[in-house]
Image (cartoon, rainbow, N blue to C red):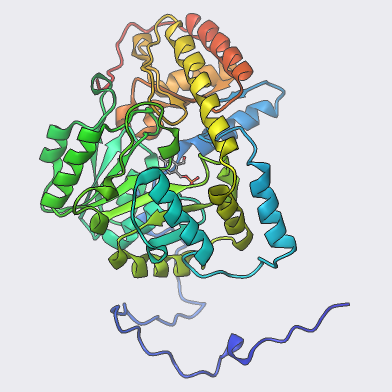
Length: 440
Ligand code: PLP
């Protein structure tokens, strides 16, 4: 029988006094009343012309459409571990859901014990000293990018971002009215930011510098010297840095360094990380930002305006992921290292393909310029001819032309089969003879 639900008087306080304007923010124009008969063409806001996308989701949909016709497709397009979330993590979330009634809204910026666990975790892995009050938990790490742009970038402000790079940086910068400025990552420079060139890109309008190490899609890493140089530049030119460290625990060589730990950087760095990649938790939607204090109220309001808070029982799982056994996370990492060798060696054995050894994350970014075709054409060919779904390098910005991205977050067996199919299929691909320019 349906239970009568009693709402607190304050739940629907329709007759309440009109709220006073929020003191610290200026109000925009008052809402306008319109009448239904008024003529109004239905159309999207013009800002929608400026939003991009993440092609991986579209490629996956095309691959699934192909599969529905009976074709076998090996999925190397989406950047997500193929492993299951560690069982103890899922159990903790299930317990929270079933036994602890974790079914209500939480604090907008996340439950306190999780924020404390994140503080301990970033100290352990990144050497960052912070407080729970500076941690904002979000549904996935992606919102941290969006909130950073919304909170910081005014019309015409410039955002420097890596290209090729995660497509959402450019998309969001443009969407909020900013001007994205590409810092090119070249193969000849092992896909690291060219520091001299970067210095020349900074202007008086530069507000935000986005860095990502280990890097999607190239697997490159920034060296300790690079990061020191970037920090000096940020302090000198008064930039905020969005440090995307989502692949931080998947760095296989070199010494990891979080830019937030360098002098003058704590007050100007947003460190982005999350649970998707390290703990195979993409579908949980769990991420976080470690922020300077002055940015927390803005992020908190953006959370309240957009999602209210992050899923309550997922946060219980997140706590277990950080504080429980790390055996699975370590095993995933070891497996990625083994697959990396298999994948890169296999690609380099294919005539016409060359691939640098990535130093982190789980992507191969082979150079396919010798085929004289665009990356998109080759990616399409491989999907329909070989049943291997990868992505064109241009899914990561114009400067990804000449490359493909394959995620090696798939079983060794599937990777070996994919390599065989790619080799056979490229051998039958007619070369056009025109060289496609790679930005190297
Ligand atoms: N940053 C980079 C570089 C990524 O590749 C991804 C996901 O692919 C994210 C952030 C977002 O991760 P999440 O799934 O936690 O939103």
